[in-house]
Image 1 (tube, rainbow, N blue to C red):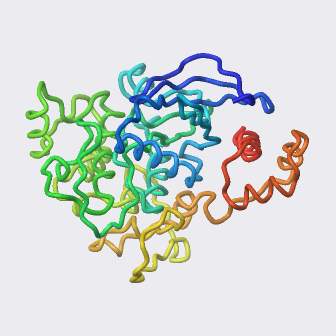
Image 2: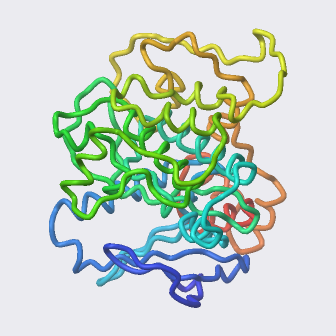
Length: 357
């Protein structure tokens, strides 16, 4: 940690605290999560932390928080991440009571792009909520907290029960197992409702009562919102998973598209539904995960595909930034090798902080 100066605590999690820090070489702010090893005595807790580190290490998208470095000492595991100076969406919404649709729309669209990228990498997030959506100083969304996330085969049954009670899907509560990425879409519906209404759609005085409300799927709107917004929320909060709106349907929803703009066939991404026996991997980008079996006809605009695929295929190494990192004492060959191989070390941390600025 000699490359970082710690400034002040900015958050607290289940296993430790988050501290604001400064990267000494670049002068950029970072967030340092310190996880106490004494809180990782059981295998479940250890796997949870290691899984989050692994997923963050592999992710590279504008709307997903960037992992910079990981350190370990006898008492702690220290995870250095990009700092989102705008705080989390929960505090932002609370401060305003609720968001007007014109403000919520671009924020929510970024969340959809980030989640679409996550699901396309065969990762089920399982804890999409206001608290886990960060904003940087420019208002750019950063999805964080992959502690209960899982790399999945969308056709295999999952039985894990996890997530935040007010946001979890009815099929998780029913404890009969669930497939695919549908549970993230339910949470997305709860999140949009919370953004526009300032509260969650399902509230109760006991967990049993809350579960019953979620299973029934009945809710009302405490504030006046447009019919288009209601249609989008209602389309996500469907009890039957396959009836929920898919990502392509969300992005083509009237709430996002209020113009009569026309598109040619060449303006759309054409999915390839090819059978494969390969194990799902976070190293692949499978946009087909975003389509439901009964909804292959739904089209995804090519520009939306580009936002979803952001940086995965086209990551460009900036020669000027490489030259600056060289001045910190790192040989160019080492920097280039680390970047092309996706390594996490101090040379790549310096590069990424300068690139993120």
